[in-house]
Length: 295
Length: 287
Image (cartoon, rainbow over all chains, first blue to last red; front, side, top):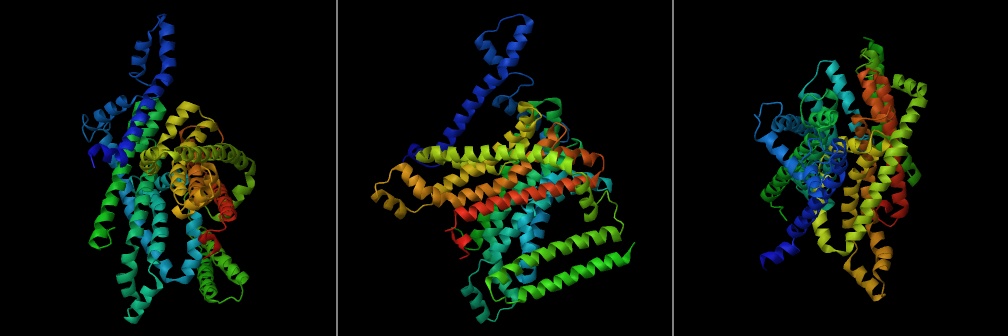
């Protein structure tokens, strides 16, 4: 098979074509959405503006309705590479603050979720009474409580990383519980019977059968959990009065109409999410490979 | 500190737990009995949590700014029904319902449109999966700038948030019918649309309902969070963020209770429709 054939019939080619189409559409919208302001400016100055000049201007506005992709990329480059990492203008600084809250919340949420799942597996009363509430609580817009948790914890003197991490914990703990309960229950009756014939204790069954067979479920849930943790951390930064973090960048950008800043924060968040999901995915593959379960 | 209240609440909680332990060990005779126990156990657990909450906040004199007792929240709900109703109308009936319907509808239509082009499917599916993992909520300030402070900007956020899960799930669902069944449709000389309507859409409905359920939660979150970036002076997100600033925590909790209730009812309605439509699916038959 030639390279071009593989590109075309694999996923890479189509994805690239779709991305290219999105870029073309984006530039089209940049011209359409930003043109009224340029015309208005020209009208006020009493000059007429040529079409080519108009199009060039729409892509270089300082506060465009929709910034052009190259403006966003330039801003990203400027705020990550050209600024000192400790500077408040550096996106790396803000990204790190969000990332640390995300990771702390994700780790606590994962451990807590596994603990609850183990309890649900081993106690029928807990399974019957807690599980419906775990499912029901997923339908509740937890993110709506985020500002209150932050403000209230601030009032009692807890501020900084932990309140944001708690929101991430709350969000990431649900997918883990649901996935782990499913995973820990996934061994079939015949396998459990085999463990019984070995006269294995509850702990041994857990350690040697339930835990390993729950691994694929755990990692699938962790991918969802880490993405949602990031959302939690970003929303958690909104009510703190735009101090630091990607969420604060979004809020400050919307206050001052700095659209390029909003878009670059958005792209940074997207890159962070993609990176986190990818790392979990790599860990997933490595663990399954070591356990001899790789597909 | 009022020890009797605390001890009373803990005793109630422990006895509820004991009753639950006893209930799950019962072997009821009929289906109705089993169902009653299945409802009673989580109900009792929920009630005991509320009692424990009430007892601890009152017993230890927890400042109401930190965590108001449930009775106080309930009183606040009763007292401010008109405000809560207005917020509910603004956020739920306008932004959520409109955005949800438009987002899910658009996702569905685009999935049908690209169904005949494997090339577009291969291009859009990985991107759709990728976008589903992104913090799309961050688009809220941009939408508020574009569409103004009223509910239209919130509906736009909800549309974007619900579009991708629907697209991805519908495309996957349309591929779910087996080749045997499709061959059968061919031997009947069924056209593309007949096959789609009679075989592939029913086969895809578990996937589609999965997306509808995911989206019901996402839509409410999207609308509420988008209101943090600017609203007219009504709406659930607006109320939460302003009352937090004024330290009226009981009002915030009342709003959260309304949000939780409407979110659960929304989810429940979608689940009921799912049960009616996909009655043939193993997970509904109870297999």
